[in-house]
Length: 82
Image (tube, rainbow, N blue to C red):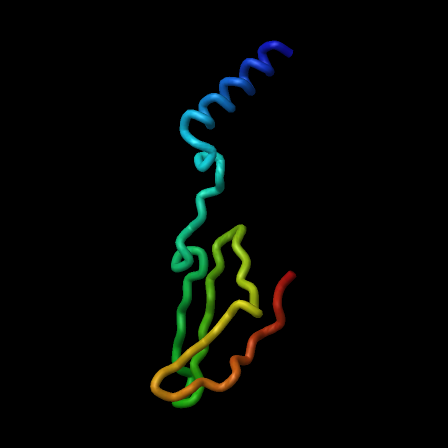
């Protein structure tokens, strides 16, 4: 019991010395967490695909698409995965 308490104390002391941010998860930049590829299927259709890193989630209500100079129509999204 004393060994476990001493071990926990040393872990917390080290974390405090480095700052609590050292305990926070290291997040990938968005470009790495959500890799995008796109291709034109025809002159009016662009297919966009996201390769989502493990442990990350892409929420459909947060997605926005914009094209220039012509405004895009509403995106057609496949069913989501739980």
